Amino acid sequence: MLSKTNATTYVHGPMALVLAGLLVGAGCAHGNPGGNGNNTNNNDNSNTNSNTTPGSLLLGQNCSASRECQSDLCLGVGQELLCSVACENDPCPSEFYCAHVDVQIAPAGEDVPTAGFYCLPDRGGLCKPCGSDINCTFAGDRCLDLGNGAKVCGRDCQHNGTCPVGFECRQGQCWPIMNTCDCIPERVGATRACQENNEFGVCLGVQTCNNDDWDACSAGIPSFEVCNGVDDDCDGSLPTDELDADENGTIDCMENCTPSAEVCDSVDNDCNGIVDDGDPVAMCGTALNGEIICLHGECIIGSCDPGFVDIDGDPATGCECSMTTSGGDTCTLAEIVGPLTDVAGGQTETRTGILQENEERWYYVQALDEPDVGAGACDNYHFRVQFTVNPSDVYKLDIIAETCGGADECSQSVVDFQRYLNFRDESDPLDPIGECPCSDTPGVGENLCSDNSMVYLIRIFRLLGTALTCEPYELEFTNGVYPAPI
Image (cartoon, rainbow, N blue to C red; front, top):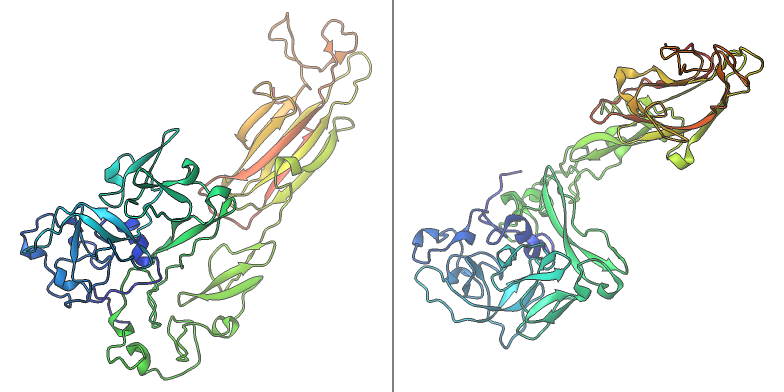
């Protein structure tokens, strides 16, 4: 694939011209982003693009002289020069609208046209948030105050009062119906700009209001350029070998194509005009516990079977990690553990699992404080939840008690939580604490035996930014097993 050239501009889809101004600013919709959008000196001949073929520029493209435009008019709109045409008596083409322009500048050596109605490209500026008029797309667009602190850009509609669907002409500007840019029943059919972006570029598109929600964005997914005559990275231009220089109906890079078996290499090996369209298994083989796909000329893991995940990104090892899980997805769907009693040496249950970064698991644990019989009885209630295995210390716990009244009953981001009464502390002789020993009718050296049964909701999660490991955590729930730590 040859390098790209700015000598040829390629428009990808109907909205490429319309929305380009959203991303590169006024004056940078096409061609070199450092072009004539900042041309404020109409006496400077240095801005003239000597490489532009006379009469080759389309409506809406930036220009430096009227002779460059097919319309023979390079119009000054604000501080930007672009190809335009008068629309006082003739309608504008699709994706353009007729607006009043108070012309202030002109290309070097040309007279400034009179103020009037001219065709301007629809760059999707309607409903763009603004603080003042200067934030809006063209000089005639106003920053509208919708109330409640919301300000958005309007659009000039003085010519015939026409506005896009979802807008109405008021005070010479297109206002959103009901003074909102949201998708509501009154604005069904309204559109807004959207984009898809990744490391290859930014593709522009639109979303349409459908009842009370926006449809999916129409933008394509950017990718690196391949021999197909399409602007794959959505930068507005094609590599020179994707052009049809000899105008024989076939792009240059396909004219000398010799068919061969399709492989995953971003090349149209079988010369059918589509790259990497062979059978994924034939091109890339199979993956353990998953599926391999060809993406951008590389074999990668496309998906994993339920319960498995790819950690190392190597197709050769496939989806090598078994995601053993326990617990519920949410607090209301928490997995029930127990109930755990504190008699006869107590009870223990364990759970294991592996979580990805944005996952969490929930457990519902009832820890019972069974009746303590006889004088001098020891209340063995000691609820504890702890990690007995915590790979690289990446897992943490949040504990929400039935009554979250203090630090002993509610903890966040811990690895070990305990609530216990199987002790006696006489640090304060007038108010000893603990229930070992205890009695229903406490005497000297005893406290009252009380029922401390409680439900605990426990959330487990993995710390953000930590590496995923195939080693599972092990979580231990106990009651009446461990001695008091004091």
